Length: 251
Image (cartoon, rainbow, N blue to C red; front, side):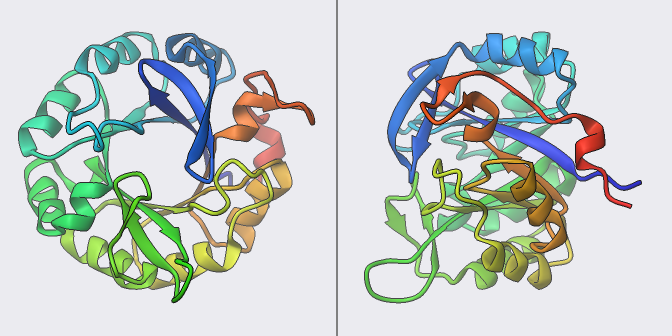
């Protein structure tokens, strides 16, 4: 039986846990450390925390927060938000995280991916690609929480990140974020087929069928989501959930 990793992606804003829709309209959903405790009980494979304001505010994700997660979490976790230097990465790993997630700095300076991989190992470096289509033109990657276009096509940037030494790529559809309408399967598959490293699908999952499609049709190595793990029902009441292991197993 094969089971892909299933990863809750939790967004931080002003110290609280929030969920966005298409990278806007952040909705407060609770205390992040309480969420860690619940995911411990639910035996989540891994967690990812992203501080969505860090790059805009020109700061790095709180090390005190990373330490607190490290003291509570029973599973590996990665963090991202405002990382700019090798010292930022060293401090984050020292605070307890297993991986760092690079977004804006990777888009602006791809050589930083290589420096991070050479210093800390490729398995520590995750590159998150935020993808959407501008009003005119083709799909491209974006930086600074989806506010700055990079001009690079998703496949082009994915190959570049892999060549520079990234150990894993998260491919996120901005247009699907928070909609719970399913992954952008053609986008995920195009990245999975373009690079030889693990690819994580993110953006739009609303149920188990979406997670399964992310693996079977999108060819993602791992599947990730936010809304489906923190919201329940048509009124989107806050309820933290996680699938049973048997529900995500492939023959």
